[in-house]
Image 1 (cartoon, rainbow, N blue to C red):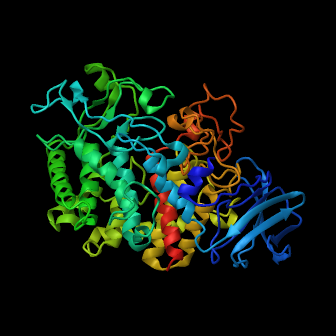
Image 2: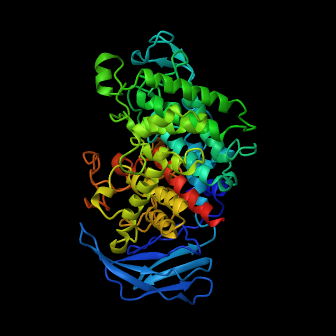
Image 3: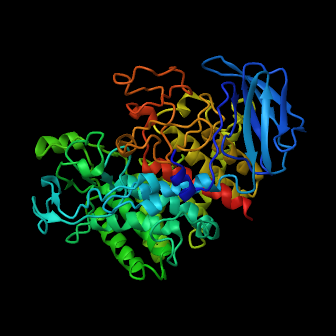
Length: 572
């Protein structure tokens, strides 16, 4: 990793060899948190020494020897929570050693990097050396001449019309921009921001807007929100599903991409997600000095979008069917969704919070989920529930009370599995916990949900459980990877990410969360070196592995929301 970029992002960097047998959080632990490590096999003697003094630092307690329910591997879970003095330490077992740090702001740097990663993936502007170091690049995809695809034609904008749709983030390993995923990504970060406003306001990550009056996180989100506004048809309020090339580009830099870009079909899912996040943003940015007109603009856009959805309640985005009717054929990411109750619920919740109009309460009640599930781009109900449970205008609604009970019950069920787990985590104890994007969609969003349970109940068991999920992502797991690029002693070097592969820099963009172990191995025709087919070991750090090693804005948003909240708790 470039020394320049680490200085710009995080300060001084040191790297250490990874242990083959000791699994622990490789980034940093808070003085007052639970601290555990996992030793592969049966550990007879584990010691911890203080690197500054060379003396034994604390007694290590063996919690259990756990057996994986699928691989049958035995692992020893050890606890050293009594160690609370900031510093650098070495844990030893036999000939194996691993270093770790304890610090009051243990996760601040990695949190900052997960936010800075969004700047590095901006489209439509130059990424400058003073902010990006070795990752600087010229403007890619200005998107000022985007064609209306025949599927997106309307009376005001016939097929072939040219519109301007600049700004926004590249969605994942590819170079396209998708409303459904953008709305989710902005929404989940704004949820965490609302709960930890003062901490996020103090997080500066060296982006072009850093010297204005607005928190860097809100500046970064604004860059994508501005793009989203361009995706609304001003003639009817509907929102295009995505801005895309007909086919994925190769592994080249943005300036080498040659395909024409289009906006394609409006969809109810995209329009409702847009309505929800614009209503949420209108509240949060109200009175903002740097974007004085945005709140009113976003509010009008949200209401217009909701009106289009009411008139078009089930326009689904089905790409194969669309491509049978319209040319050019589109083969990029679909983000299809056949169940829209969660989108109606989230949109109605945010519009109720924005307007206070009780007409939206009927939609909330009608579409509230029967059981709680962690949020994903395809199931956004939890984003509505988070808001119902924490915004004063909504806490008295019947749906809010009912959903609070469900969320707490859900979190209790997660925690119940920790006592017998192999890695001292509430998640990762069932094969179902692993799959496409599991590090965000299982560990990240469940960790965030546990923090909401902590906020609602005040019970610290939920805070501990959220930290355990973070520890898993940061290294205490079956592969021994810290799954965020540029951090830890063993992190991904070859993510499925076009600019990281094509830019000529040895190390990938820092601060990117990869998808993680995926026993589905949907890419195995192209990837020959998966080390294992076990659910929690089915990960390989090769560029071709889009099933386990791709990155995506929704995944980064989820881990940013979790890590930022954990850091904020330490500042209280």
